[in-house]
Length: 136
Image (cartoon, rainbow, N blue to C red; front, side):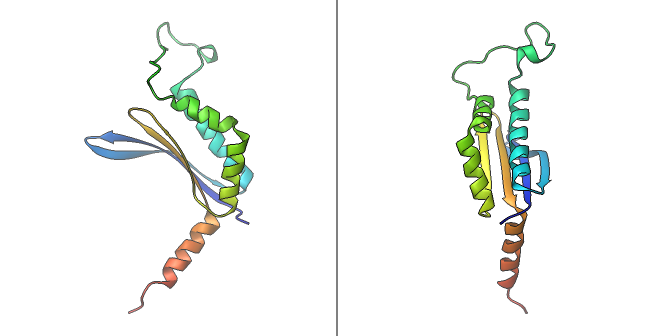
């Protein structure tokens, strides 16, 4: 069983013709349940910032406007992922099995990526790579 997980959230965009990543947070979760909670919390956090509820705060008139139906709905994708118990269970199974999990949603300008992986699996990969290195 993998007991500790490293979680990251990054936004990627293009600047001056290059893909640039902006870290939005990192968390070292001591349990699988906390790793899942943090991923859901960050997905909700991004969704609320991209698509705030007009009832949730004080916004000046005209500050929030609807977008065209053709615009990819990143907040909707992230909220749906958070609410889907089946997807949460699949993510838990993957992490418990030592596999990297990536959840991503993108619109015309930005890709939002949530990653999680087992700290134990990372250590095992480093050990295996170190064992394969030739010694002079």
